Length: 409
Image 1 (tube, rainbow, N blue to C red):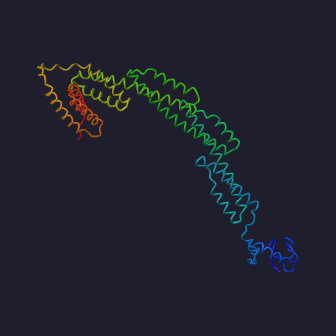
Image 2: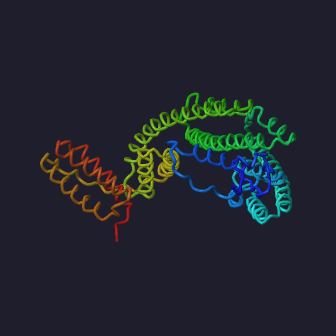
Image 3: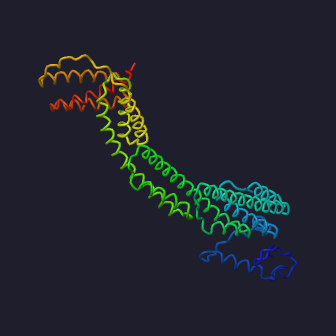
């Protein structure tokens, strides 16, 4: 007689008439075992199957079903993981990973009730710290919005603030996290765009004020700038409307960069003729020419603020020159004999070579060295074309510019 039931694999005493578990008759146990073995063979042959594994051994490899306490621990653990994942969207937030590990270790050692207590405590801490983070970040978000309003702009958040407040009051932390993250992203982007627009408006206002001091005509630019400032304070702004204001401001700045240089170039051309009336040895003449050179250099490089500052100083310098008493007249000398074109060309070539040697003594990376090299090339081209008068004027300007520059040591 077999020692185990072929149906439920439970031990059968040798004196029992039926299996105590399933009721299978022990008299049929051998036939039942043979039928089970034959059904396990793939081809229905007579190959003898290996003896069945004892039920006592098989029961050791199959874990028992979890208890209700263990199932509750697993459910709480999964819930904590989901909640931590949601809070991680806020960046640095509450974390109960240590408690989860501690509870798992306690349960593995058979202390299921202790693990449940740890998880319950972690659940309470996670909820409390999540609420603290959400309320603190919400308060900070309100402060950032108020700070924007103090700078003269109101940012339209739509229903975000009311939805966030409702979610916090209802304890819907997952929804509150999503709304808060999106609101913080919008406020951060608006702060950056608003800072850029403020810088653009400050640049426009600075150029406008400097141009007004110099009485440079600007047309309707001042009115357009004031219109933008008025509209910024009248309405709540969205990202789209702020971008529209930025485009309008960029257009005004472009108009300024078109209007100011033409006026500066015209005035520098006039002042150059005025400076030609003053001899080089007159006090203040060299400084005025230096200011004229600086203004032209700044203008070529698009530095309008610096160009207007140099022009304002140049005006004062010219006023001083015109108020100064004229120098004593030099004794009359007979005019030099008129030079032939070849003599003038030879003299100007010597002058150009002398100035080129002076240019080589300047610091090579200085703006003066670069400007002087350009003027040397212009004078050389004019001499090659035998445009002697223009070449003489170019070399004279270069000589005056180099008179104020220290040589490289």
